[in-house]
Length: 272
Image 1 (tube, one colour):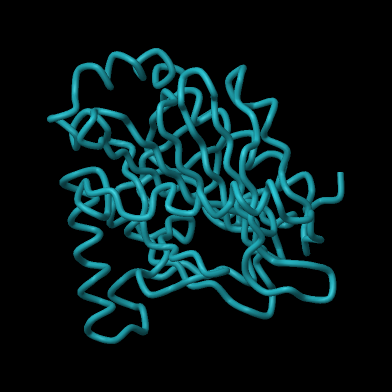
Image 2 (tube, rainbow, N blue to C red; image 1 turned 90 degrees about the vertical axis):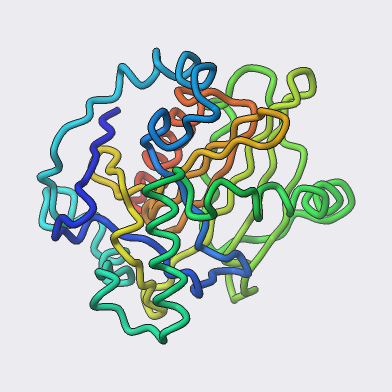
């Protein structure tokens, strides 16, 4: 797994971020995370840094040289056509939207999260998803969900699922899932939203600070009042947009789920 830091002003189409006003399947695609954990979260500090240091050591941080014309470009033709990455200065936004995104960029740089270190949407859908999973019926999806159960630490179980977005001819175009560990109380939520080639997705590139094996990644860390650590990541994977948040997982565990999700989604898109 190679995690690469892009300079914030680097002119590359592989760095992107969702505009604050953009939504997909009812989920606001605006909260994201920074990978510079120890620098941006000094108040949370030594315990977090010690916990994640072993996993971070396996991630090679180096200057980014990738571009959308890489060898993987051909397999991502549909997604590339549906997703565009633009600099904030070049984006078509109104004054309020531009100010909001500029604030997110500043927060991300200085606090490690676009919200400035404040919990906002994390696990707000958990209760509804649990009820839907327990009493609702399984519904068709317009795409195949990634299978992440085996990538989670031992003991995690699926406790919630809710369908989102538009119900089309082949099924819903979005799904939310909640996984929990009954003993440790750790949690992970993941939302997958199908990217339609005829419905372009515009991303603001300054908010993407990382690159994971050629994929632009929004990455953030938050810590609540109890000292619980939250990791959050958002990225385009194959034919879908993925957003996931963990609580009570360490960084290597979280990044393993991100990596497996990315690999599986690309394989599904290729029809492997």
